[in-house]
Image 1 (cartoon, rainbow, N blue to C red):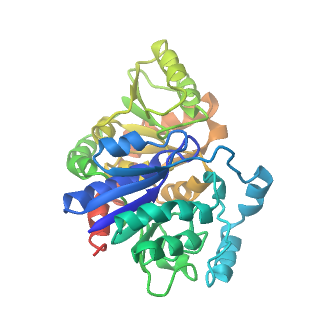
Image 2 (image 1 turned 30 degrees about the horizontal axis):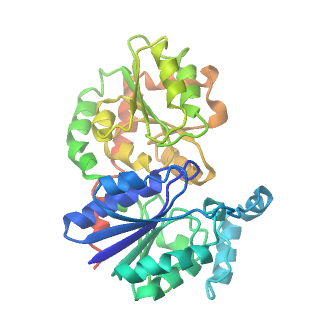
Image 3 (image 1 turned 180 degrees about the horizontal axis):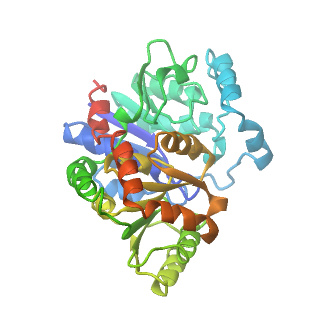
Length: 390
């Protein structure tokens, strides 16, 4: 089959949507399917990463005078989940002129984005189109499907807009088909929950070793290695604030590894702090062995995004930071499950870190969280999802 993926990365969006789509693309390619991407050429678009992975890419230009939704308009769109669901259900029948809450992620309207995508869709004539974009809804999906008679899979986390999908994936903990009632066609198949989390093969490969190490240290282990990774971009430089807060809260002999993306804008400032930090601290940029790094760490300080499921797969206890409103649901669910402790960015301070690090310094707390996290995700989600694309 031929599969076309529409997703974006940028300094604003981050890298998570592209990275999980690459995971899906690799699994599809491994099974003999041909995969191409369509992305908008936003700052930090990761087009080179896609091409280095061996996939075709159509890069859509950014208009020189792109019209963006004003901040006041965004605030009006960001309603409660119940209000959004009601609005979506009211508009799902027509699926036109619906303004997604994240419309500001695109420099053009979704109608214009569809116009831009139709020529490459027709040229490629894909069997399936996969759309992973909070700024696109049923309006775009209907146009994309009609371009070449393709079926469409939507990847969503928010359940805040209508979809014209044949298949929908929501990999988040606690999400169920009921969340999409009235938002998808009756015949749409729904894949929900962490059973379908899109993780690269390396995480399943490292799972056994990681869990065995943590089980062996359940009674005698201590906090010796912390992994800090706040996404591929971290445009607000929360990483530096975390490292500063750790200065007054770490136990003796504890070292820190920081992982940053290649498009992260504050790498130099983080490296400068690490060079003179009062604890051993190394900074890695564009690391390609994240599963190994997570398996070797005793604790992660990470964002409440899609990497949450990678940490769960490896049983890695986590101090989780909510860096965007769309991460809040993941943070709430993981803390309720006992798989992480959640903090707001306003709580990145020595006074807050001291009791949290003290909590994680006790082996029984690390052991309890590792077991609960590991039970949530086994790392085989990508294979399960691809089996539905037939």
